[in-house]
Length: 257
Image (tube, rainbow, N blue to C red; front, side):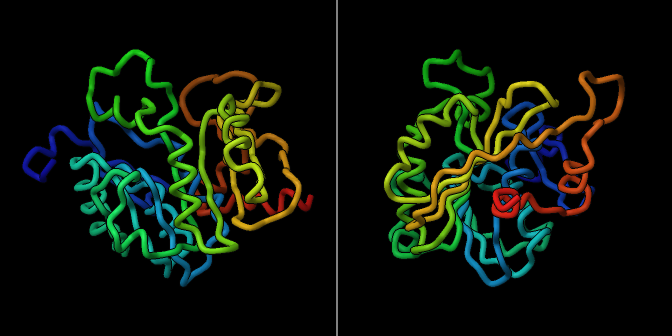
């Protein structure tokens, strides 16, 4: 994708306009998941972050808006999305390096580095799920690379004491915990669309070398009320703080109560 065919793109605002990103109009489109993922990172200025499967860069750009001074690297296998991520980084003034590559065969210079944080929003759906009409959307949503590879590659790129943070479907939480067992401490934050409804997504945060017991946090409720009464987002106050005011989702603080 180039600037000559912007008709096939939209220019979308995140974090109340603190981040703006070009996205395919009909392909895979970032929504709230990368925003929540970025908000959950316990990152500090001066630290390094690697995003696996960065798409157009929304998670890294949201993180950059909330925590200035990070060293950001994104890996994206789809050339069109990698190009948009570079464009978005430049337009947002973010020091985000985007590497077009399959995460299973990272370049030698990336394999030689260790990061303070690794983040990922892996494809949600099984490889036998019916294909999406748009090829980019299909590759972003269907699991071509096994979840085990996402976690293994991410874990290998972490320094000791570093954090791996991912967002996924709640139904995959047992798989994630099994894959991480024995080499990390883990916290999980379920994301529920409304109170008293099952949480469909979960943020999982694992610390390399940690030995603390597993912590399952209370659900983070996204919308007020038990139904959507009309126009508007109807976010809870806690979600509005994240989506509008650059607020953080501090899992460790939640765990402490």
